Length: 253
Image (cartoon, rainbow, N blue to C red; front, side):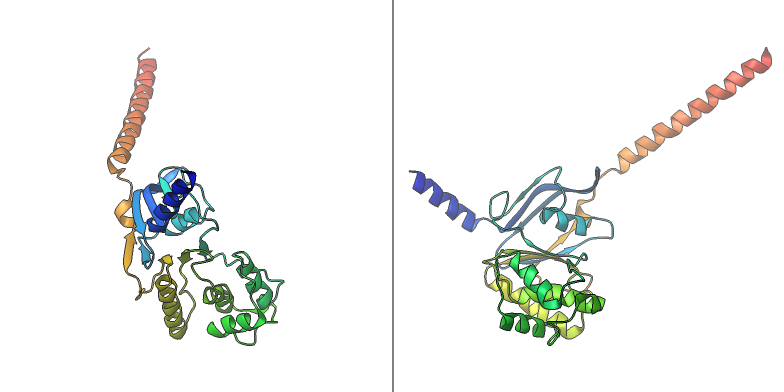
């Protein structure tokens, strides 16, 4: 019976979305940026996360990566509250240590997901991002664009077996047209192999087959804000009138 129950749970997880958001609130501190977000992201899907500035796109990705708390709503990974390994999160904070070489940094980033890359694999990954021959270079000598390429090079070697979900925050930034095209091809290959991607980008994402617009989930606080302002204005007027009446009575005396 116990074995049957475990098999049923495994089967259920296999058919569950890789990522499910249920009535999720994205907040900065105690201030809600977006509310009641629902999303089902399945194997084979690349979701383009869009929205006006300030709607919390990066904040949402950080919540999904486990770097920020979730105050309201639920996040499910394959039907469960967590994955065996955290989703891959590639952000503006690149995670590159300046005192390490390019090869050492890339090796460390891959080690986090149980990958022990060979020298040949490192060479192939760096060649994919046009950094062939940079293996021994100190990372403090890299330009901003080259540093970003080092962080993206791990995508060349990672598969859904390590982690089925990639969270990418503006991965096309500082990349030329050729590199953007190669990266989009890699994203397509990753989801074809069973993974899923949630990503932000100010550039078109040609391979995206789903979209989540956070501007559709802004909190409806216009009335509340108006009422609060009205109450505040009323209080100010009452205080002002009270003060005027007090001085008036003093003058009469």
